[in-house]
Amino acid sequence: GCLVHQAVQARCRLWQRSTSQRPVPPARTCIPTYPMPSLQRMPPYGYSSRSFLEANIFTLKKQARPASRLDLRPLALLNTDYKVKTRIIAKRIRPLLPKRIHEHQT
Image 1 (tube, rainbow, N blue to C red):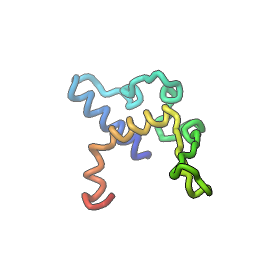
Image 2 (image 1 turned 90 degrees about the vertical axis):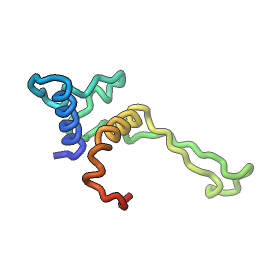
Image 3 (image 1 turned 135 degrees about the vertical axis):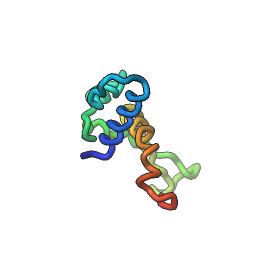
Image 4 (image 1 turned 45 degrees about the vertical axis):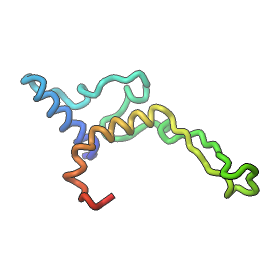
């Protein structure tokens, strides 16, 4: 299965065991609902909508008067859903990383 989905399931089980002794429901039920529709439809196995791949790209000047394209720096503005989803996933798998990645590995 997907490592992220397994991490979310494990985290949900730990949280639910610490808050009550009732049976543990499926992992999807402990993912809170978010105001953004694409996160509410978030599939459990890591597939996302095409909007997560879209970005608005702008260029910033490196110099006052750019003479070529090399004097411009591209800046990609990703959609908010993408940023929120990646932060949620990063926060949830952060406790698992030290067990899976060596301390000298980046």
